[in-house]
Amino acid sequence: MIYSQSPKLDFNDVLILPNLSPLQSRAEVNLSSEKLKKRLNIDTCGIIAANMDGVGTFEVSRALSKHGCMTALSKHLAVNDLIDYFNDDHSSKYAFYTLGKSEEDLSKFKQFVSRYENLNVLKVCLDVANGYMTDLSGYINKLYAIKNNIILMSGNVVDNVGISNLGKSDIIKMGIGPGANCLTREVTGIGYPQFSCIYDSVKVNNTKKIICSDGGCTSSGDIVKAFAAGANMVMLGSMLAGTDQGGGEVIDGSYVKFYGMSSKTAQQKHGNEIKNYRASEGRTTMVPYKGDIGLIIEELLGGIRSACTYVGASHIDELTERATFIQVNSTLNRSMEKYTVGN
Image (cartoon, rainbow, N blue to C red; front, side, top):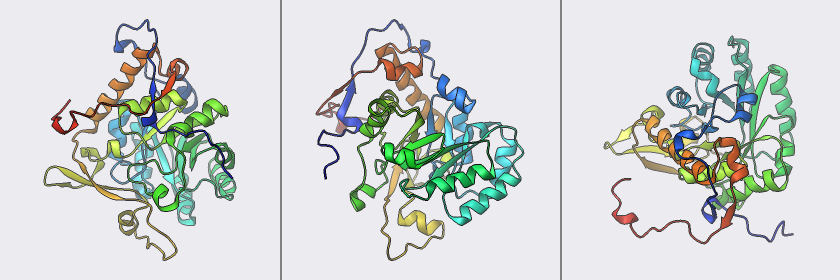
């Protein structure tokens, strides 16, 4: 059975048409989402760092919070360190506590909650590669039973069937296989092109949940396309890897090791033996050392502001209303790439 014979698209398959705009400057654009402010009680544009080694660190969270950006902390951080951070650090209101669905994850979460003293509502990320497991709704109910005033982001799924399977979750993390260090599509043949994954769920099927687009972005333009397609949040991994705040070792002054969390590297680091019935679904790479993460975020936010001026969106929440997409065969002139020394 073929689910759909119409083409499904990635970010590099589309461009956004410019629109008549009253805006005279990028400075006129407000990047704080009113929808997210009402739901999350923070001023944020919706960018969130992924819960990966080298990205989901306390240092990254502190740095990104200064720019109104969030972080899903790694689930491998020590519980005592998490308790200290969430109870005492102002930037923790921009952070998500991350866990999986093992009994060990649940036990750690109970221990954390028993010592959580902050009056802020706790934001939680339930990170599961396969959001279609039918026992997830029951597990989600367990989390709310442990602490009922959480804001829960769950995933990952790619369509409304998956969204329904995630029960009462507040935020849906969408995307299977689009990440730069993810090999799920190659290893399993499972997935859904990321632009259409978001667009079809929000614009076609009218999903009302908060949607987080997870993976597939390689530039600020891709982030813009994700927001314009209907995502309220955009999760970034490789784009934020290799920074001072990520904590990885800088090799030869130029590179930092970065790997997918389903890779052999990640499994071995965290003491998880890859069983003989499993395959690695992540790659290990050496990314360029990028320095201070604040400089990267400023560039990305500048690109989003510029896009808003092109379509006449004075507020980031207007971006999806003002954007019209066209399908293309190519988005960039790459003739000078091999000569490029900077931008």
